[in-house]
Structure formats: C-alpha cells, structure tokens
Image 1 (tube, rainbow, N blue to C red):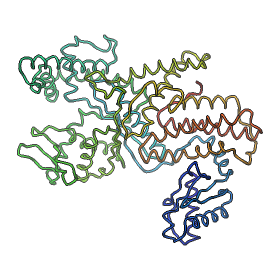
Image 2 (image 1 turned 120 degrees about the vertical axis):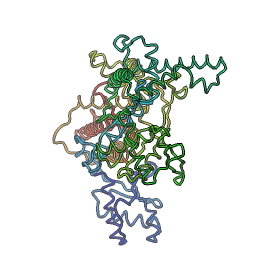
Image 3 (image 1 turned 30 degrees about the vertical axis):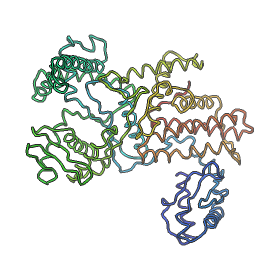
Image 4 (image 1 turned 90 degrees about the vertical axis):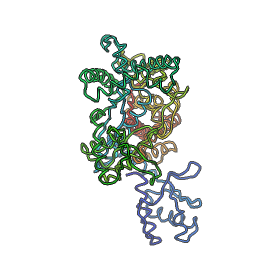
Length: 591
C-alpha cells in the first residue's frame, strides 16, 4: 500500500471524529508537497473550508495536530499554508518501506482483477517493411499491454494484418512485370524489403506512364486512372476477389516473404501477439451487421443501392457502410473484426493503438456499434497517438523518405558501439557480450525516445539525440543501472545491522520517489500513457546520481549507514529494471 493510500483513511477518520464529516478516502486530495515548501505530502483542504465554515489555517492546524497526536510514528511534523496542510512523514515509515521492498520481486504489480483487455497494435500492410511510424505503434501497444497486465488485468495482444487491397496489388503487379522471378533467396534481400522495393517501383513506373499520357493531352486525373500499370493493379484486385488461382498463388507467395521478414523484425524489437487477424479473412464479416442495421433502421439505403448511416445528430455526417455494388468499406470490416475479437476473448476493453489520423474513423466505429446495441461497444477505446516525423518533415513511402525499421536499428547499433567504446569500459567484454550490449543500448535508446513523449503528441525523431549517454535518454538510465549493479557486486549487504535513526535529505528524497513506483504504474495504466513511466525512470536515475555524488556507499560514516545505502541501491536498481521492463527495455548488468 502506498503512503497516499495509507494517509487517506487516516485523514477520513480525523474528519469524522473532529467534524462528524463522512468522506470516502478516495475523495481526499493528497499530492506530493511542492519543493519550495517543507513537507513530503500535502492534503488539499479547499473543498472543506467553505462547508465547515473555518479559516484555512485553523482547519489545517486542527487536522494536522490531530494526526500528529494520534499517529506520531507516521507524522513527524506539519505546517499549514493557506488551504494546504503539509505533512512531514517520519523516517521510520521510509526505512520500514525500504526494508519490506528492497528485495521485493513483484515491484509495482497489483493483484489479478476480473478485467479483460485486448490490445490491438502494429497492423502493418503486407506491401512494405515496418518503418519508424510502425515502431512507435508497436512500442506503445506492447508497453500499454504490459502495464495493464502489471495492474492485474488479463491481457490479449493482437494484430490485424492488412494483406489485401489495391496497395497489395500494386507490389504484385510490379513484381510480375519487372521482377524476373526474384526471390528473397536469389537476391539476398529480406522478404518484406523485397516486396516493398516493388511497391516503390510501382510508384516510379506509374509516374512515368502518367507523364507520357499527360504529354499526349490527357488530364492528370485521367492519366492517374488510365496508366496501364494502374489498370493492371485494379484488374489484379478484381481477379483476387474472384479467386483467380494464379493471382491467389502469387499473393500467397509474396505474403509469405513479407511475414517471414516481419517475424525477424518483431523478434528483434521484442514484439509478440497472442493472435493475428487477417484482413483477407475479415473484410466481408461486417456485411451481416449491415443487414441487421437495415432491418432495425440503424442504416438506410440510397437510390443507387449503397448503404449509409446518418450520424449528423452526433455532430458527425453521413457515413458509407456498403458500396452500391455490395462491396465492403473499411468501417464494414472493422465492425466484423470487433465482433470476431469479442467472440475470441470477451473483453471489457478493446484498445486500438492507431494514429490520430483515424480519430474520426474510430468515433464512427464506436457509434455504430452502440447503435447496433453490441454489448462490447462501450469498451472500445482508441489509444490515439501522434505521427513520428523526421527533422526534415513527414515520411512518405512512395517518395522514399521513410525510415526503415531494420536499417534504423542497424545504424543505431553502430552508434551505440562507437559511443560505448569512447567510454573505454568494455575492454574485458567478449565479442558475444559486446554484440548483446550494443543491441541492448540501441534498442533501449530507440524505445525510450519513442515512448518518453505523451502518445497524443506528434514527435520528431532525432537518432543522435536518442543514443546520448547523458540527459533524458534510455542509455543514461541503462548506464545508471549498470553503475548501481557494479556497486552491489563490490559491496555486499551485511546481515543483522540495525537501521540508522535519521535519514539524510537525499536518502529520504530517493526513498520517497521509489515508494511512488506502484502509484506511477497505476497512473500510466489509467491514462494509457507509458511516457509517465519513462519520465519516472529518468527521475529515479537522475536523483540516484545526485545521491551517489553526495553520499559515499563504500566509505559511509557507519556500518548502519553503509547498509542503508546498499538497500537504497538495491531498491533503485530493481525499480529502474522493473519500470524499464514495462517499456520493453532491457537494462544491462555491466556497461
């Protein structure tokens, strides 16, 4: 139980005894005391002042004195500033927390709840490799799943593979026309990269053919549609939907190449799924919803036979759910997929990790499910996130400005190697150990940089900044952890030594911050925001370095102080490792 959870019922009891005021403990506002004031935690009294008709200073003094008298082992002192009652917590509480927590293997974890949550993330297209934008999506999805698991929810991680449609047909046509039978084996190119090369080639050839048609007098709009390569792609899509055996065989072959490539990247970045859904299986599932909705008056049919829903009353507009030729649109298949997911795992919440470009689409999806009275509609949650941009601007696949995930990781490994060797502390590492260390640093730098920003915000990715060993970075935190582990290897804890009676200010400040870890995990889960844990891990590492600079562990004044500081080191290392693990980041024992 956190200190805040400890204080709330005590304060509630005080209010009842002093003023016959019944409050639920959870309604009592308790915050960390601001640095400029004396105290550790602050009770906010404003909501009580008017109701109890007391001056802020008088009310605060009465409550503070009551707490100090009744709980002297918990409350060391108090002060009142306007409507704020600042409490200084007794050192005994912090040392007791340290003793019960420094070897706790379940730091930050809550008991199992009944809550079932499905998290959908990654959702790549099978016409190109994963890129930097996919990495932010994967890291956010995996991390929020782990954070929710730590707070006791039962989790299923899933992915929808966008394996059909015109974009897939484009790479297939380009390979058919220009590939000369090329395979990943014959070219030595990773499967997803090979298919992606042909998607880019399609764009090049399409532009060339458009230019020729425009030169002959055709409008740009007509040239775009009538370029031979585009017409071939459109025909291939029709043939695929009609089940043409040759087209299906080519589609299956190229998708196999892509999935093999994806699997390599997923393994490298630590992404995994409990189930993968395929658009080729789900794209017609929603049609039964349209039939249901037409019968119930949720949808309406226009003169051309297309089916729509009117959402103007909800401040949106009319939305197409079935084309006039009876084919499904994206929202149709998403209706079917939501139902399919619920059948597989009857969830309380279904989280969609999807970029903020789809905010409107996700609103429409939930509204339609609500109007269809689906039992899971209320559990739909869009974990919207901002796009990742480069210092030069937005990435575009067809213009060749996309940062490929594999290439980026390879580059970061090189930077990690160069910067680690500059520090000159890895001379006794074997080649295998060095390779693992560089991979750990590179991936940690990348994940931390992409997760340290609030998901809702757009961000600019700067590779050089991400792998700095100083500042708000993953490598800084990893290096701090390795430093602590080195201390603990050289200075073992001694048994049977009593705790010192008084804590130094930095000792206490660090223990207070470490005690907040469980609360930070719960807040990150409640807000669906892994950046809170990234910021917290950095704060812990930064404060530890200040503590270690000010207070020697090896040469502590007394054996009691030395043992206390070793316990602080142990808990700090464990808290850093636990918080970084929820971000999917490994922390090395040595660097």
